[in-house]
Length: 224
Length: 113
Image (tube, rainbow over all chains, first blue to last red; front, side):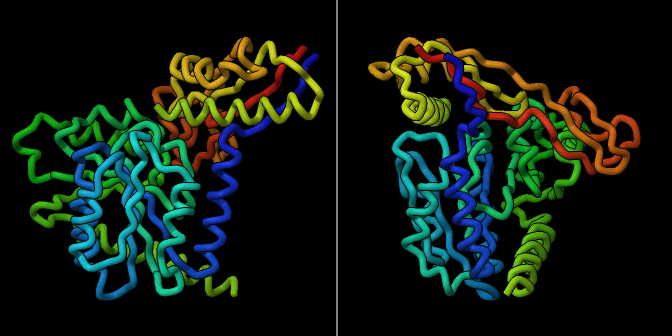
């Protein structure tokens, strides 16, 4: 006997993600899912972002990591609430993990939640964790071939941050090819060239983020 | 290795569908997996076999249909097969394109005994 099913394999995850979107949306909280390879500079970007924005808005961070709380300790030094999720070897965060983490935060006081995903260009791309948008960090030292090798994580991103541009003179990174590939895969995404070490380009990133947060607030107030 | 989570999702869907239809054993599971997903079919087969051991889907054959990546241009309405992950409209050059196929992660049907 044949049984026709036509069921989305990630349906359970997506249902929880939709619940989270509704809950965060009702409070006008913007949620960002930060993706990228291990060592691409996600946590350093986050530290810079918190230092720049924490006085103008209320921010909390959810840190995904396989085993350690090293990143959460770095974030806590910025004086913002941080919840650690240890996946115990799991390669990605899912919506249920984020739902559990959100239970530990005072949502009513927040404007922005940044979720730093597990460092990985493959698995996290597939899971909606209730975010408003994904942002993917690619560092110069990883090479310009990564967008075509890992298309989904770049396709899903609304902004791609090319980090460590201060190292360009010391590498054979082909910026033209990287930009061409990124705009082919994700034609609408913002492409931001930054160096978290020198601060180059960070102001453009903060502006982009501020604008997205403000749009969400406006939409959420219009819905009230 | 998120294929483990995907395998678990498949097994839950299969178990529900089989139970709802009073089926004892599942002999075949047909999946549709989009080209633009982060799924490695061999890894998925391996994870599914491990996950399904001891269940009604233990001996099920996993048939995987890879769904091609197809976009539709929102400006000129043309549908096009995407090559080399270039999601820009080949006709009018628009960047406003939407994916109409290629993101599937779907259990299409089961064959049960």
